[in-house]
Length: 492
Ligand code: NDP
Image 1 (cartoon, rainbow, N blue to C red):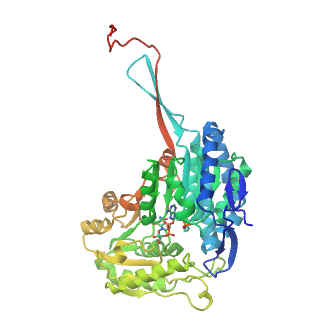
Image 2 (image 1 turned 90 degrees about the horizontal axis):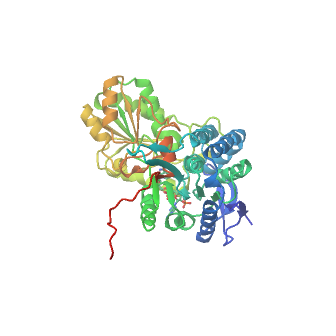
Image 3 (image 1 turned 90 degrees about the vertical axis):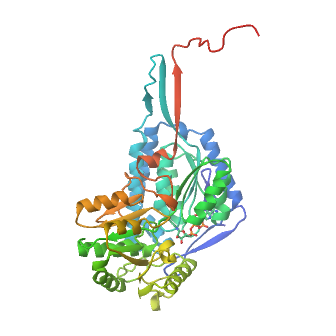
């Protein structure tokens, strides 16, 4: 029987005995068989995390010691990087070179929070009264439910696990049912470096079963979710009944604005990266190319030519530039999304096809360019989460900003121009959580990440990413207590 749930320091099977086969999206090969947990299992994990928080040593461990332990996690991840990268590539189908970059980013994230953990010892407040000592203490929130998606399985989990641990919380992690293996390996590492039993728990299984108790349970104090908008709404609504803290990262419909005076080759190359890296399964994908009308034809012709040359292939195919989509269901969704766009009037310039021949066993979808789209079309409004870029044009700076902000989302945007003043003006006016100028996609563990509008609530990474996992407590001490006389001392 598969024992792949990690609860209270022990590997366990799902109570129901159910299992799930994990298959590589690149070719359908069996990668592993894992427990398929349900509500009972997650409840058990929540209670373990609750006990570890209420009675265990972790929340009371000095913050610098917790930080040291996170640094050891980073070192262990670097040591086992190749093993982790292979596991990530087999679960997601992404190229091994991309998984290696992810593993390096993950180690950096643990390093960052390891170093930050002991730095902030609270704050003294000047009460304006010499007889008062007032201070702010930062305490852990409690038990955290961490729900992560399949596109960057361990990276998205690490953005939650590292600050949650740094702040002294305990947690239950629920990765996507499709991509469990690196989360299992992370539990091994956390145990090896000495995280106490019950602090880190892992449940696997479908979101509506194994994930739902993390937003519903009164014993969970915070739920942090990365995934789709619809699921984010379900989770926020469920969390409202117990007024728990909620952090949501729900993707975006991210404009990549290219002015005519941009450095052409760099803008073109990065427009490809923005849209097609990891086959567009990126919350910050630059899926809306917004290009100045005067260069539209030459820019889009070149984009189409280059997109047609992108090679698809499996994780270990050195000649491949990008991999498959995560599942047959997701490929169907992307197929329907493009079909609807064309029906609404978009011009299909390239792509829109599935992988054939050697690729027929995987969920490949060719890089796709949809030209001539207009505001309000479904392909402009909805997140596609596939290798699909739409093209809109503008003639003025104001119009570029208006189109860039014409979305209910607000996660990320790019601006390409050699005019520094224009770049700053446009960046200031774009209502997105990250704006890249003459670049696309880089992020830093030191810099906050998150969205305006329906891209979510809260921020991950940076100092705010730690603050999300802390409660600020005001401790006020009167060192010269006196009678106030507010209520006169008289007989009743
Ligand atoms: P979901 O948002 O449904 O899944 C993300 C995570 O949430 C998974 O671990 C999932 O579990 C879990 N989950 C699902 N329902 C619940 C629930 N009721 N309670 C708790 N946890 C739950 O992503 P999908 O795979 O359905 O993708 C849908 C769309 O979301 C994509 O097409 C894309 O547009 C977007 N997306 C955005 C991401 C981002 O980075 N912002 C990442 C992934 C998707 P399980 O999968 O195991 O059922």
